[in-house]
Image 1 (cartoon, rainbow, N blue to C red):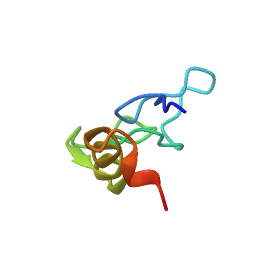
Image 2 (image 1 turned 30 degrees about the vertical axis):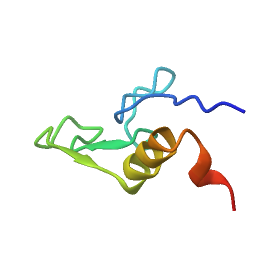
Image 3 (image 1 turned 180 degrees about the vertical axis):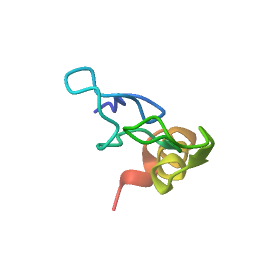
Length: 62
């Protein structure tokens, strides 16, 4: 089984040009109106995926 990510950072939706839905592992401080600092913050999912990679998927076995 393999895992593929959509994108590593939050990105603008290609179909709606919105940032409402945030799919990345890294949060980007930017709003739909263009405001924000553009600072980036690692989400919990960043660390989860990092662990999956480091253990070659072994961490997924329950």
